[in-house]
Image (cartoon, rainbow over all chains, first blue to last red; front, side, top):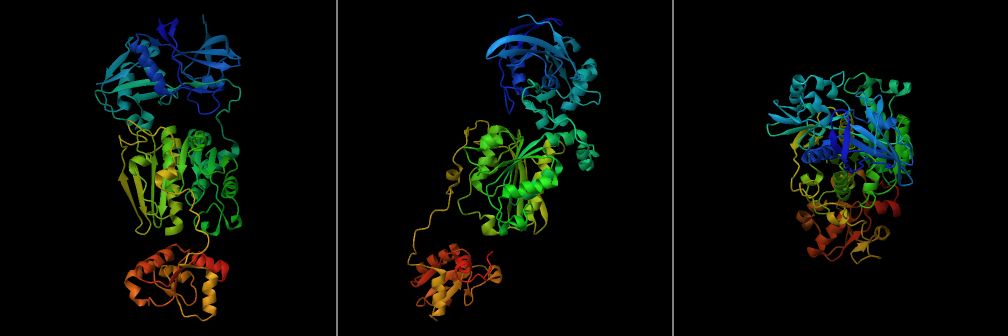
Length: 111
Length: 481
């Protein structure tokens, strides 16, 4: 997610879809290639925006921050999780993990 | 001065700059300079033990330093160093979590690994979470299977469709005499699970082909090539390049072996070393040329070592170096290999974007062509040769094998003239006489018959199936080899 950040609040202005690089059942796991994130960061710089967060979906599942999400997270970005029910968007939540990947704080999300 | 790009959330620690220019000859020095100048950044990038946090990747230009020299990766003035997080996740449904602990039995089992800091608990868990595909459970596959199982690789795939036979036992130590006639996969599975019941084995009872290779290989982190033929080597190589998985390569012939790691990021692939396959028939297989039984043990163990090092991320991988071993002189040598920028598989502008027909590429028929039915006028069955002896006919049986084969077994009354000596010893033969030639299986004696016919002999015949067929059809007391 590209946009602007003033330290506290983040505004998403552009969502860039990245490849799910997970080798296996992709409906329950995702993995981003660092090269793709690097390219997204370059794109943000080119457009004068910031990379502010990462989004992913939980198909037919709640929008919670799972143990897998937490263990593979990074405290520098907001993680928006979308719950998709039968192919339709249902709801979303945003989380900010800590540096030790032991806990994530839920953030206020307006959409 | 190298330029370090700072991700947005970290700019608060570097006076809101989006990049910082820093001195340093290596990534380690540049990062040290960065965190010295901006101490608050240190906690963001490094954990309490001073290691880069698990979610931090460092790139020099477009290359991940994990696949270069890590901290020691050289940095030049014009280079850009980027800090990139690694991100993954997913819902809990259907997720197979990575093993996070070892059982007490495993801790005891792996204790000699665990007490070395280079492996330790972290490394042993990496081994447990690793997925390695072993192509072939023959000469190279045997020591590979034994040691990878013992080392605690959590998931090992085996590809083979062959059956154990007696000629395998001289080198394929994963199989025993009791296994002769069994599927190699079943025999290898039993041995590996006996060594280590904690591992998971996937048995792929197929010949690896262009149709199934990507699907089979996709689920594994590292591919180990234990095959013995050129079509499969090119297939494994191209599939590894396409999937971006390292190919731990070994090959053996008689007393000599080679090993290296292909298709590692930035390193060469098999096609960089051998752009074209050798002409069909030029390089003999182990069945034709023989192999010292211990040789695949040594080369397979080198492959197993490289596999474990790749998983642990320790040491210098055998990338860009072809290790050559000669058992007779007991010498190891090394050739430097480079990625060829024009390589059709891994070059800058690859033209191989999908798997091709590798039998056609190597000029090798998929199966041996069917022999013409019946006997040609220059062929004779072993039983007919036996009848000639029994009738007391005057004829000459020549054995065109090598002297060391003659020592293994012989047909009484046969005269040894090795194929290579035939041209200069042809004067020993009388072209008016009936001559029958034989070898082990009928191939070399076929060449001898062709040669003699060109030399003007008319009454020459090749004994079909060689001394093997003689053993089957005439005299079982003659051993087969």
